[in-house]
Length: 78
Image (tube, rainbow, N blue to C red):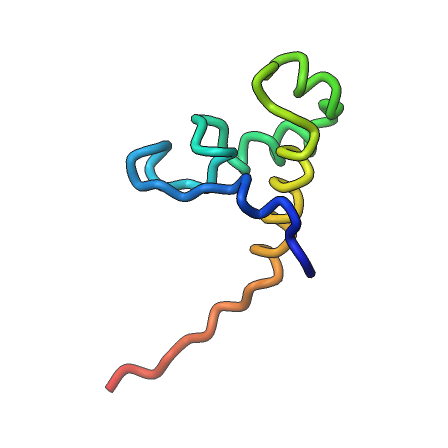
């Protein structure tokens, strides 16, 4: 999977506790994906958050999709 807009996702320990955010703002990937999952449309999000762009929503969805593909591998303790 390629992420043409991955630069829109930022991780900064000083912003929202280090959660993945949109362009360094206090809007997390989880906020956007949660809104979409609850039935809010892209246009409604863009109206509610006028500083966001359509590409921000796509980047959040791509990032969330990519993260859901990760696997956790348990290591044996020594």
